[in-house]
Amino acid sequence: MGNVPLVTEDASPEFVTRALRSTGVIDADTEVAEVEHDRIGEGVGLLCNLARLTLRYKGAAHGAPSSVILKVPSNLPENRGVGDHFGFYEREGRFYAELGESLPVRIPRCYFNHIDPEANEFALMIEDFGGRTMVSQVAGIEFERAAESLRALALVHAEWWQSPALDTLTWLPRGTDPVMLSAGGEYRKALPMFSELFGSDLPDGAVRLSEQVGKSYEELATSLSDAPNTVCHGDFRADNLMFDDSSSGREHVGIIDWQIAMRNPGIGDVCYFLTQSMTIDGRRQFERDLLDVWYSSLSSALGAPPDSYSVDTAWDDYRAATGMMTVYSVVAGGGMDPSNERGKQLVTEMANRSFTAALDLDAAALIPT
Image (cartoon, rainbow, N blue to C red; front, top):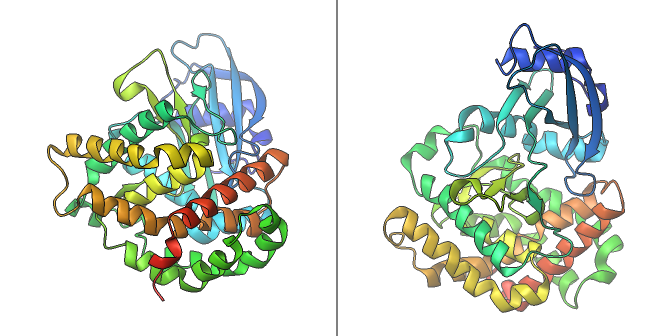
C-alpha cells in the first residue's frame, strides 16, 4: 500500500480506512468518516512524528478502534538523518512484523505496518495506550515503578537469553555490527556541539570523560559484547513505559518504541534505564537493589541463574556500561533538534544523570585504552 503520509497531519479518512482494511482490522463495509489529529510525543521521542488519531465512522463499526497511534519518521532533517543512518524505521517495522506480540510482555497491537526501504517510506499504526499511566522521565521514575519495569524487561531478556535463534534475526543488528559501532563516529561528531550546549550543566569531570568515551567508544562496545546477548529494547526508559494499574502480570507494564531494538547484552538496557530514568539521588540509593531485581527476575524466568554470569559479574558490566550509555544524550544533544523546551529539558537531565553515574562508578577506569 503506497501513498503513506509523510507527516501525521496528512492522514486522511481515506488513508486510515485503506490502512485498517488492508490488515482486516475493519471490514469492507466499515469506513472512517472523520479523523481528529492530536500530536503527541513532542519532547519525548526525537526520531519520529507521532499523533493520536481519534476516529469516527460512517455506519456500523463493530469492534473498530476508536483511536490509534500513527508513527512516521521525523520531518526534522537532523533527526531523520540519524534514524535513516541506523535503520531505526525499518527496524521497528520488522520488529512488529517478526517479533511483536510473541514477546512475553505487553506491547501495542499493530494495525498497519508499511515498510518500503527502497522508497524510504515507513508508517506504523498501532494500538492507543493513552489510558495507561505514564511517569515523567524528567521528574524521574521511583523505586516501585522501576522494579515493575525491570521485572518486565527481564522476561524479554529471558525469552532470547543466549539463544541460538538470535542468529536468525539478521535484521536486528548486534552491538558490534558496523552500523552500531558507527555510533562512535556520531558521538565524536556531536561532541563539540554537545559540550557547547550542555557542558555547563554537567558535573566536574564530565567533559574529560566524554572525550575518553568518544576516543574509545568502539573498543568499549566490543569489550562489553562478551556479556550474554539477547533481544534488547535499546531505548528502555521511563517515557517508553506505560502502566495499567488495573491489571497485573503481562498486562501491567506496556512497552512502546522498539525502533532501537538490537541483539546485545541485556545489562545495557538495565544500565540505560537506571542511569537516565531515575534521579541522581534515586539511582545512587537503589541501583544495586534494582539490578538485583532484574537479575533475580531473569533467573526466575530462565529457571535458574544464568550460566557463567553471576550477579557480581553483571554489576561489573553495569559499571563499565555507564560510560557507553552517555552516547544517547551526546548524540541527541549535539546532533539532533530536540524540537521544544521539554525535549531540551529531557536531554539535559539524561546527560547530567548519565555522566554523573559514569563518574560515580569510575567508568573511566574500565574503558579500554
